[in-house]
Structures are given as structure tokens and as C-alpha cells.
Image (cartoon, rainbow, N blue to C red; front, side):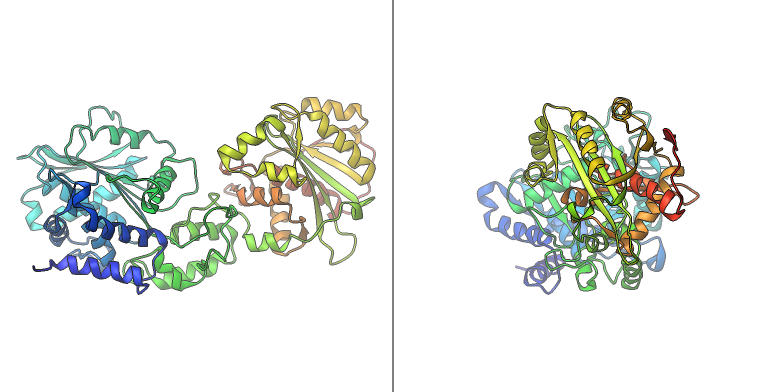
Length: 574
């Protein structure tokens, strides 16, 4: 029996992946193993593999041409990994001859040709899939984004004499009059999403979808088609509450065998990372796959050396090693690693280097400045004291206090997988009775700290703090309370100073795990003038301790750097 051209390529790719000739992460290996396992058990499961159907789709790409860059005008030749994905996706069938896979999730780093490949799939579904009245859509959150894949498909049609004879191009519409089929861009901001009868949907950059609405509309619109295909192509994101991470997580479960779903195809190209129990941050030591080791990069970039350039990655890696914001960008976009935040503010290795011990007893009588962030009374509240160095070469020392409502600890552990219970047992968090934070506990701690340390000022955000502000003033604390604004004017200076201290390893935070977690969650926002401040809205989880730290450092900067003598005063407002 003769072997089809792509069959040999695909099985060689599978062999190379499984024997390590081609470096691949566990999810790619599992996808390859799944295909081989299904070939062995196809008949008993009501499945069959039609190699000729798979070859037809791959051959169809021979009608298409690249339209941009160094390959412009050349015939589109699929790389082995693309042939593998296409082969498996279109070769598997049910007993009735319809396609097995109805949903596909392909996650890979940027510039690996996924949009070009997806555009070719869209044109195939329009032209050659044998579906009368086929409706194919390139979908994204915004119409301009949806046009990216669709515009590539349009250029492919225009560049192919064979396709030009069949497909009419009119603005954003590709259509075949004889079959009443069409291919259009579609977005969630489109006038109406009603009445779709979808045969093919290509959802571009699913990680950018803030809601699941568009995905659900497209998924519902496939109901009347015999073998509709909904295809998501994306790079990793950061929001683990998103529809994209839901599909990412489901793909992992299908590949690992935790879920059996014969209609779901998925593959994820990324670095191998630690699994259960990992810290939230991504370190240099992710289970043998250091991000800076370029021999690992091909795991996330199967087109490395083709459409993805090694020199360009090297340049970005050098920059990412030194610039905190660039590191998160590099991990997510270049290595397809889901990060904890949009723009990780400080590299973990520098924060970790600041984990020198802090002795609360040894700080007795020391001058300090505080920051109090009450946040919501149903979640965590933070009090942070900053102790400036007293001798040259010493570090700014940080002492943290955290409170949570006792009745909400179990909920946070189960729903958010945050180990509040362990932190409570270890003494890093204090629980208060009930389901809201009892501010009396905070007042008592402030009073105790005032007796223990030489506290000069306590900064607080006026929002939501009226009662505790009044209570503190009644305790005789009005002379050291300072209202601290949360805008750029107040926050930018101390935020930049904190970054300088961390990068210079001039901070000692005592390796407090709660503050470590919050530091890893922290995202900063910047304005056109280059000012920065902590951004609670875009930070994935709590950052209250870091906000308190910035406020406390801000008050220390006002007086320590100025070397001023305190004057008697009342309540200050920044």
C-alpha cells in the first residue's frame, strides 16, 4: 500500500517528537501519542482515519501563495508541524464519514505562521469542503483584528489563478455564487451576530477576548451543520478567568486523558513547566526548561529558523533579562507561557534576592513609616512598615501585617487556589471573626506597633477608610496620619524608588510569602509622561501589601531623603 507524501512527513515528525530529535513539550508529545493510540483503537471506538481526506487539505495549500515578507509570491508549503496538525484535524472521521473534530485549539508563540495557516484553512472550508452555502468567518474581539486572518485569505485568493476563477472578492467578502458560500470577518462589536449558520469559524488570538460571548455565539451557530469546525488560534495570555484559559485548561485535560472528548482537537507549543503546587511566578528553573536557554525555544516556536528568527529572539531575550516589563512580554509572546500578570513589574530573581531576614524584635525602637491599605472589608487588608537604613550599606527593612475575614478563608482556598489557610497557620495572616474584616483588630495592631517602634507616619488611602481614620484619631494618632492619593502624582515617585531598591537588592522583605505572592501579582500602569503606579484593575490577584509598601516608602522618601526635622502638625493630605 503506497504511502501518501504527507503521511511520511507526519509520521517522521511524530517519531522525531517522541524520540527527542525535535525538542517538544509534554503537550505536543501527548498530542502525538493520542493520534497513534487512536489509530490502534479506532474501529472499536467508531472512528476511522481517512489519509486521502487529510492529504487533500494539505495539497490544497499548494494552490496558495505567501503574500508578505521574504516568501511573497511563493507557494505556501506547510512545515512538518503544520502538516501534523492539518493531517490529524482533517483525517479523522466518524463512521458516517463526517469529520470527527468539531473544535480545535492551537496555541503557539507569535510569528510561527499560525495566522497564515488558519487563513488557508478558512479558504479550504469555503472552496473545497463540499459544503453548500458554507458560512466561514474569521472572528476576533474587534473587526480590525478579525480582518488580519481574513485579509491574508483574500490575498491568497487574489494570488491564485485557480481560486480567482471561482471566488469573487468584494471588500471584506469572499463568496462563491454557485454554492452561495461566503467568507467574512466577524467581531463582537459587529452590528448583529444573530442568524449565523456557521460551517467554519476561525477565532484569532482568543486570549484577547475579555468575555466568552463571541465564542459562545459561534459555538451555538454550528448546530445545523454536519461537520462544522470552530478553530481557535492564539498565543498564551495572562487572565486565568478568561474563555481562552478555559479552553487551554480543557485541552490539557483532553491531552492528559483526564477528559475523553473525541470531538476536541488541541495542541499547545510551550516550554515544559512545573505542574501541581508551583509558585505563581515563572522562574529560570522551570523543570529543566530555563527560559533563557535558547535550545528550549523551539518547543514554543516550531517555526524557529523559518518564519521565527533566532537572532530576533536572542535580541529580545537579552533585553528581557534586564527589563522587568519586557520579561513578561517575552515569556508570553515569544515562549507561549501563561504569565501571572499583563506586565510583570520586577523579575523574580531580583525580588528573591531581597528576601533577607527581618527581625521584628531587632527593630524595636527603630524609626519607621507605615502604609495602610484596607481594600475591601470582605478581603485582605494590609499594613506595612518600612524601616530606613541607619548605617551605610544597610537595607530598607519591611514588616508586614495582613488580615482576612475568617469565614472567607476556605472559599478563597477552594475557588482561587490561594493558600490562605497555610498562611494563617504559619502566622503570616491574622483572621478576624465573621465574613468581613473587623477593623478593631487592625486598630489594636497599630496601637501595639506604636508602642514598639518609632513610627513617624502612617499613610492611608482616604477611600473607604473614614471610620478607621476617626478611630485612629480618637486613639491620639492624628499627628502622624497622612492621606495618600492613589494617582500618579503620589504613587509614581515611590513606585520607581521601590523598583530601584529591588533591582539594587537594597530591600529586605523577610521572604514573607503573602507579600511574595502580591509582588508576583503586581502590574503597573504608566502614563505618557513616564509616570507609573500599581494597577489593581489589571493585576490578576491581590496587591494590597505592595500598595501599602509603596505608600510607606513614599512617606519615608519625603523625610529621609530631605533630612527634614518634623514639625508639629495635624492631618496631612497629599
